[in-house]
Length: 284
Image (cartoon, rainbow, N blue to C red):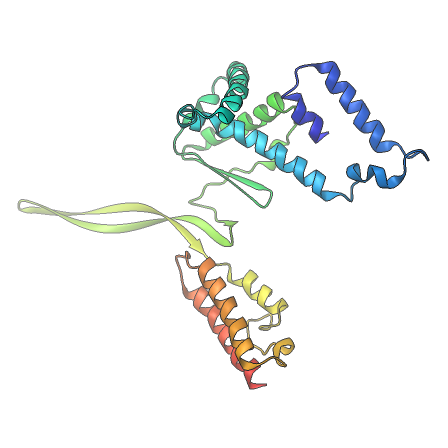
């Protein structure tokens, strides 16, 4: 079904699409003695590579069309022959966007907002933008209409959550991220008069999730569930230099990945657990 839905946006002949869908279903459900089961392994559920390929291709298709209006000016400056073919393909998509503008004319202009950020990570998509709650609801229903119109994909609106970053923290790329509002007092002096003024600044705060990391270290037998460091019994038979090198690599990777945290206390605690676990492993 995913393959047919993708081809539906490329092939305009409806009869060919129905014929292709019929052949795929018949080939998938054919279990006669003429064709052995090994020959239909390509369409079996155990072959996850094909389905992941179709899934990624489907995601790439709608993301490419979603981001295209934002990159339209930089894209048209390319003159290579390979891009020229894609350019013809994109002009067809622009026509579809024009029809979609008639279908939902109050929301398509949001595409050109330069303060929109789109990220996809671990089968989850995050779309960040500034604006009111009503504007975010327009974004939500625009995406649903966009998927239904262009990809013939009936999405579920309740699966799209609207969160305000100033009141909500979300887990992303190994961090708990949120927007903190910091206030500062500024003293202004104008001639003989002076007055105090409060200024508010927004700061994107990233915090290391200490509890999930301690659980991961506990599963790897570096500490207990409560975070108490213990020796790693599997590495006790190794040489001292090998034990030190392995703990050193883990500490370096942990530092490199979580060095962007705004609060370093959690990172220092993780390093302390690993160092004390290394010392206990060497002592045995």
